[in-house]
Length: 98
Length: 461
Image (tube, rainbow over all chains, first blue to last red; front, side):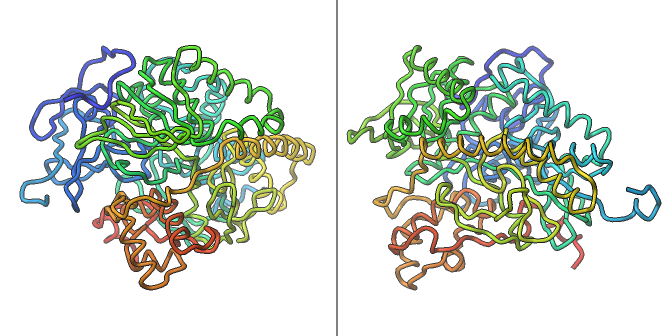
């Protein structure tokens, strides 16, 4: 899988550790959740209607295409939320459609 | 202004938005002894065009290009506002009523009365639907730029830029400079239009020169640039793998890992709508916009409009209209203003307007492909397709976009029609055979930004 994002220049600040569907991912302070997820992947969620993959669109808080969930059920807009140490992010919760 | 406790308790002047228009407006109020409240969704001032990252990466020149000094000036002015005015960052307006704004910050609700209000809510990309536009890897042009200037990251690695407008070439240039693999720039505007617009563009030779520099730089590095080029589809199953384009009559496929698209810009007008400002149809921007006089007064007493949120004029025009709107707020409050300064603003705005007319001529906004398949997704939020819109419009003889919304839910998803209104309006006008100006517009409804139901439960009835 080819990530959708890559850094224009490497960063060597200490890394934050997050998880995505239980798998560890790394982020740097100042990364948004969207950046953290798309540096290592190519989707953020699947749609409720057809189950199609989505990966954000406007990156400025207007299109609402990038909502992801925390394992505790909290929802956050990935493009306008900064990544934090220990965030456990999931694309859907157990028992949820789809 | 008096400093009595009574005057302190009077409702404040409020500016919504801390981009170039809002920052200059608030600064102007402050300079005249009025301490405004500034409401902005972002953590730091700058708006989208001069967006500041909490952890800046790369140089200011890398982030803002030729405009880095202008960005720095807005940031510095914004920093002073944070010290000297009532600056509320990371705060969204979710509802408005005459004399009152309803705010939400970190899930906490607040209500703010205002004496006078300046709306400087800016714009986002106008993106019309095309097959595959919902695929991962397809982003708005502004979004592609934010990835770079806000996060110092590149979409791709191979990326195609498509749509039209000056931003198309700017972002393609910024990506190529930062190491992006720009596969092609597809401009829907014909080259003849750009040549024809040159006399008007000569009104701002400096800005024209920058545009020509981006073009020349891209051409010198062999980046393929095509005019009269329309996107037929983004290709791929789980993410974008290529684009199919119609270039001067012939179809071509270009392999890529990402696609950035913008068919011009779209003003954020919801707040003006909630406050019942009168709107008019703008043929060049193919959109309904809140009406304003030359000073920025809306049709509603005490409500002022500035910047791209009331019609696309660009960042410099936004600064000027922000200052001018604030001067109108002050003059209307009986506070003395500098008339010579006002005349100077008028002259600069007039020159920029002529330049903008040139841009509108050079980059005419395209419409939706009228032959698009019924399976085309128009509403990204709820995956409503062109066929559903056409069927409802035909069955019930719908000539009004709001009626189409009631029947199909178009514009009722999480984005509140921000992403689909343009496409849905073009499709409805086309399939009913009536002008775009005759089908009306989606009326804004609170909350104008999504908020958790748990928060709304706390709202007063």
